[in-house]
Amino acid sequence: MKSLSQFLQSGDWKGEKHVPVIHIPQKAKAGEDIEIKVLIGEEIGHPNTLEHHISWIKVFFHPEGAKFPIEVGNYNYTAHGEGEVFNEPLTVTKMKVNKSGTVYALSYCNIHGLWENSAELVIE
Image (cartoon, rainbow, N blue to C red; front, top):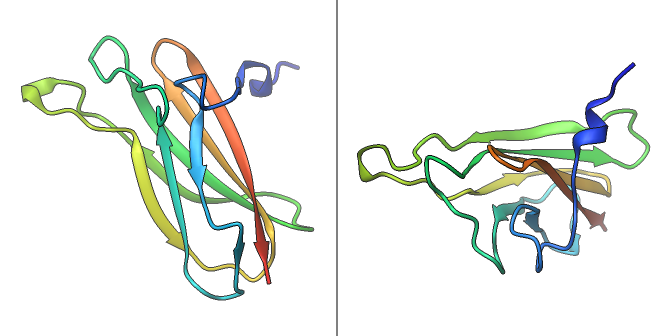
């Protein structure tokens, strides 16, 4: 059986413009709003043209001990120069959780494929 995981790429976001950059607090309190910011190209800008762009970002949270991650959000970027309008691949959302876990982000570049990153979230 083939697996989609064979296509996932990762790297250091400071040197690779396709890796999702995840900004979350290192520690948070149970049940309080936690802001998640995900963007592409923080250190090295990613092009945003019709020919080369980020189509989407997906964010998941996997609580410690849970069997599966939970999809937090799915963010599509569809303006790549049509009518002089350009999206920037950046999203900010909030969530409330009661357990520590891992935030995962996936992104898709129309030329360079799927990219992933993760960050640990500690709940006190």
